[in-house]
Length: 122
Image (cartoon, rainbow, N blue to C red; front, side, top):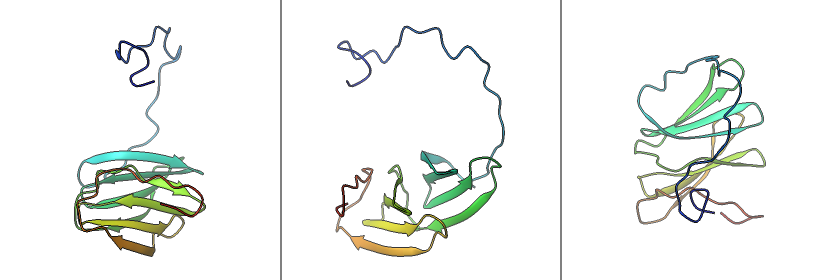
């Protein structure tokens, strides 16, 4: 349900985590980050024209892929591929391990939505 309940408050009546979170690492993306996803020990962060792949344990960058335009979408990771849209009117698919371009599709319009992948369809 949108924002947790019928009133759409987004507030959950819980006692919280019960522990104090600790900062394990930071990563300098060079600019702001719009969305993050985590999969198989890696964090994928999208933002100002780039998607970064960061080791989830150490915070060390593995690779950076550049589109040159803002990326508002949250990366979707499926079967070793990272899918995302960009303000350059394209949807991208890059290899999750290497960051190399697998393919890109020109949509003809600004892409800010996060992709959904079902079987062989994006």
